[in-house]
Length: 408
Image 1 (cartoon, rainbow, N blue to C red):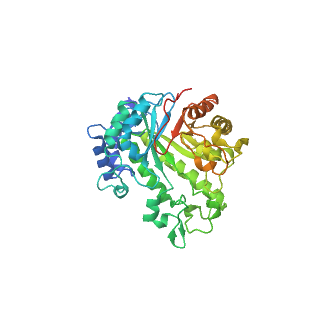
Image 2: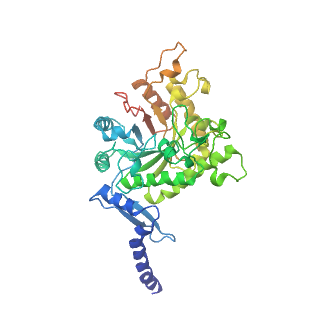
C-alpha cells in the first residue's frame, strides 16, 4: 500500500521532469533546438528517461536514426568536400562493394570551419561552410546503407578561431603565432576552448553521428621549445605546482575527460586520434599527449601509425615506410602491452596509410614505396595478426586503392 502511494506521488514529478527537461539542459540553446527540428524534419527526436528504477535518473538523447555497430569498424576518411560532392557516390560504392563499413566525416575541419551551414542564428553560423549541402540527406543515405557514421572534429588546431579570438590562442610579439605551414592553434589550457568544441560535438551527435572522433587533441608540435617564448594563459593550471610538461599533459587529459562526460547523454562513443609514438614513450612532453591517460577516458583510441610518420630506424627498421607489415606489427605489440595494463582499456582502432610519402625519400637514392593493394593489406594483416580487428584508412584526397581485401 505504501509503495502504491509512493508511486502516485513520484509519477507526476517524473512526468514533469520529462516535460521540462529539454528546457533545462544548459548545452541546448533554443537555436540548437530549432536546428535539431530542422535537421530531422519528420524524424522524432527526444530525450528519453531510462533506468527508471535507478536512484539517479539518466536521460539519453535519441537522434531518430538507427545504426548498428559493425562486427568491427573498418572505415575510411571523408572530407567535407567529398561528403557533399559527387565523390560521395564513389565512396559509397567503395564501402558497399567491399568489407568496409564506416566513414569518418569532417564536421569541423583542419582550418576550424564547420563543413555545413548551421541554422541562421546559430552561434556557429559564421564558421559554417556549404561543403555538405544537405546534412539530413547525407545521414539518411548513411542510415539506408548502414554505414557507421563517425564525426571528425579537429580541436586545438584552429586557425579560424585563433584569428577571431587571439586571446584563446598563442601570440608572438602580440600577433597570433603560426607554425611553418601557416596554421594556428588555440590554447588547451583555456576551458572556453573546450566548451566551444564540445558544443560542436553535441551538434554532430544531434545530427545522428554515432561517434565523435576528436583530432589534434594536443599542443602544437615542438611546443616545449617555445612554451616560454609565446604569450598565452595557463588558466586554472597556472598555480598547480607542476612543471610545464605535466601541466600540458593534465590539460589535454582533462579536456578528453570533460568531453566524454558532457557527451554521455547522447549515448555515443568518444574517440581520440593520437600520435602512434605516444604509445612507445611515457608521454610526449611538448604536445601533452599521454597515451595511457587519454586511453582511460575514451571508448576508442585511434593511433596514427602511418609507416611514413616514423623516423628511420624506429623499432630497428631502417626505413619504416618501405616495410608496412613490420612497422605495423612492431607498433601493435607495444600498444597491446600498454593497453593490457589499463583497468578498462578502450577499443583499439588505428589509422593506417593509403598514400605515398615521397618527401621522406629525398636524397636517399631509394625508390619511393608506392602504396596500393599489397601495402594496405600488409598493415591490416599485421593488425589482425596481433588481435586488432578495427582500423581506419587515411588518404587526404579520399582516393583509395582498388581491389583491397579489407579482411585478409
